[in-house]
Length: 390
Image (tube, rainbow, N blue to C red; front, side, top):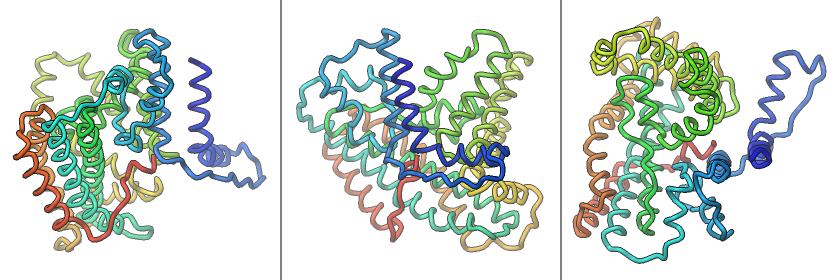
């Protein structure tokens, strides 16, 4: 298992982190006055997801939680099942491999339900993520000095964009797989309704959260060896989770924000009576605080540098009012608000389709209207999926 970990993570390090490690060494003064340029290789598409899925399989076999597959072709299919190959969901061997062994049989309910699920994912991507992308990009251009409304528009805009973009991709992956009779795990469960950051990570990028929990947080000690060990495991997991998303200081800060706040939540749960914690977590105050933390953290995730992120977050709380909202800010808040309102009915419809409770004629109708809405409301230019870069 150590050989597999070194080979897989070493490959990821060479392709993804060589340049960043050289930058860190330079910033720490370890390279002296010698100027070194590291040649950064082109990042293979989906390498992070492929490495995590492959490493998870090896560890599960090593732990005897899943029997080793004897057919190499099935292992290859598990590693390269195309609907979720590029950006997840990250599938575990016990979730996907038994399904790949079964002979394929066409099922009309599954096929048309999958088609409708795919159409809803396409709508999320085209109508929301791609419509927000060019506006949000302008908010994060170098040299832009935002006022308070623009800074909040930049934060909320990217928060809505990445949600629609990644929820859309994951939904399309689930739909494509279902058309082939394969059930993929759900990757999003209304994360912006969370009332604690711990709850947020149970709802956002669910398969990554579970992977980090089972293969990093628990082996580091988890919650079984005292508070100090738990704090260390939480911080290490979130920092490494941030670095997994990208080789930049901004991603480390993003992971650090989520780690620190989860540590605070952990300490409050230990020192506050359970009834009070539950009452607080279920209140509007809990939701509002999670919203603030997540939006501030998204600025660091999106910004090109820590300095730019600090300028935007500073403006979010101390910037000038700037007068009336600009047209771009109004468009961002409208699209983000519409996504927030529609997420519950869309998730309800998706759950019906995933469970096969929608008959083919209705599923075909939902597919038609989903694709039509994506075409009519979609952005004029295609925008790459955000998680393609990871």
